[in-house]
Image 1 (cartoon, protein in one colour):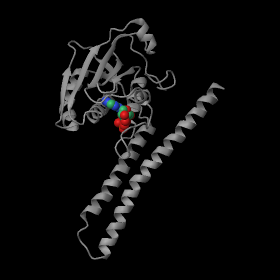
Image 2 (spheres, rainbow, N blue to C red):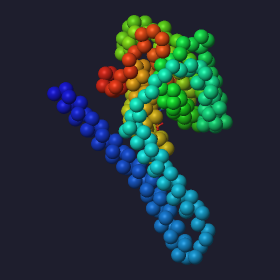
Image 3 (cartoon, rainbow, N blue to C red):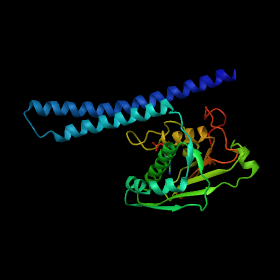
Image 4 (cartoon, rainbow, N blue to C red):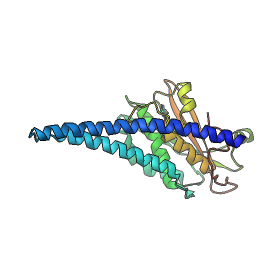
Length: 261
Ligand code: ADP
């Protein structure tokens, strides 16, 4: 019965998802078709001043392609290839990329813990996750602000560790914080849901945070969200340290625990 309920809930979620995606995708196609219609009309009239219709069509098609790419990546659930990561070095190595991605209005700061133990996770996925979180931070700070990427070692109480469903061992914390708009409680409650977005058609896919969630759970870690409307957001990743009794990766990231608050 429990299995059936879960299946029914899954089907309901899939129904909602496909509806939302079909809607977004349709809007993008409408842009392409509209631009091609105008292009055809102008060409029939003998006009050669058609650049903007070509550009509009390409823009719509590019967005649609990006959406399907993200969907494919999400559906594929690329198996993780964990290895030993010096997270501080990774963060430092990403600063240029992060700066280029978030633009001039946001200042990037780092607070890296000295003597940080290495983490055990898939390095390219971790980079993706940090980049996703940085893009979200930028989107939350349209008039600028500070993005802080910090690392730390976890000194968690047993109660905290068990509450997060983590195995015994040490954890490496990576936090990405912004001084942006923050989230209202109802948004924060749904932020990790696949395809939940407040960013509008063609802008958000709502897959960023659900990917973050899938990644940490598959890595035997945890993600924590602290956000307050008007004050900013902090996302904390807990990743198993590579030495000691690190958690075994889990095959199904979502089943064991409810979504984090
Ligand atoms: P997307 O960014 O495509 O909307 P996400 O899953 O990354 O998808 O985020 C879901 C929603 O959570 C966003 O639409 C936004 O409302 C909220 N959110 C995520 N990160 C932040 C942040 N740093 N500050 C404020 N709101 C955020």
